[in-house]
Image (tube, rainbow, N blue to C red; front, side, top):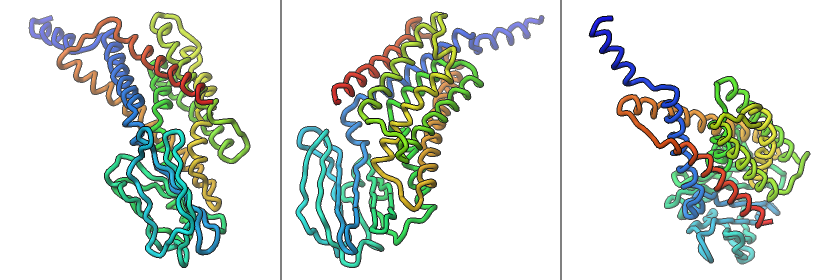
Length: 359
C-alpha cells in the first residue's frame, strides 16, 4: 500500500462509525426525543393549550338547537378566551349554564336560528390568538351530522345542507393524524418499541401487529360491539409503556426480554389497549350516521399516517445525527443510554398512579 493509500484509509476510518459508536448515536437521539416528549407532556401550560375545544349543536326542531360548548381550563376558575359566534339571526332561548369540571369549562344553552343554520357562518372568536383547535359537531333532525375542525388559521365554518363524503373523509383523516401526534403516551410507547426492536423486518412486523390490533378495537368500540370503561383503559395504556421501558435495560445488558424476543406479540397485545384509547377520542366527536364507514376508515388511516410520520421523523433525526457525528465527532458517557428508559418508565408510572387516582 502506498503512503497516499494509507492516508486515504486512515481518513476514511476517522470519519466512519464503529458499531458501538453508531449505537451511541442512536442512544443520544432517543435520549433527546425522550426529553422532548417529557417536556411537552409534563408542561401543564402546553398541555392545556393544545387540548381542543368542542362545540356541539344538536337540532331539536327546525329552528332550535341545543348547544354544548367545552373550553380547556387554565387553572382554577380560568379558561381559554374562546367564544362562540353564531349567525346574526340566532338568539338564545335559555341562558348559558356554566360549570367547571376536570379543568374544562362547559356551557349549555338553547338557541333559536330563524330558518336553521344551513348556509350560516359559525365563528370562534379568539381562536386565532391560540395554539389550540376546535371540533365542531352539528347534528341535524334527520340524523346526519357535519363535523369540522377549526384552527387558528381557519376559525370559521359555513354550515352545509348535507355532509359531503369528501369533506367527511378529509375531516376525519386530519382528526386521526392530529390525535396520534398529540398523544404523548402513544408516541412514547412507539418510541420505546423503536429502542428495543432491531432489524427492519422485525420493526415492520411489530408496527404491522400494532396497527392491526388497534384497528380492531378502534372499530369494535366505536361501532358499539365492545365497551370498556375509559379510566381503566387509560391506566393500562400507561402501564404498557412502563412494561416496554422496563425491558430496555435487560436488553442492553444481553438479557433479551419478552418484547425483544416476540415484539409483534407484545405490540399486538398492547395495541388492543391503545385502540380503545383511540376509540374514546373518536367517540367524543361522534360519527356521521350517513358516512360511518368513510369516517371510521379515514380516522384510522389518519392515525396510521401520523404514526408512520413519527417513525420516519425518528429515523431521519438518527440519520442526521450520524452525519453530524461523522463530521465533528461526538462522544457520550457510557451511562447516557440508561437515561431514556428510566425517564420513559418514570413518567409512565406517574401516569399510572395519576390515572388510577382518577377512578
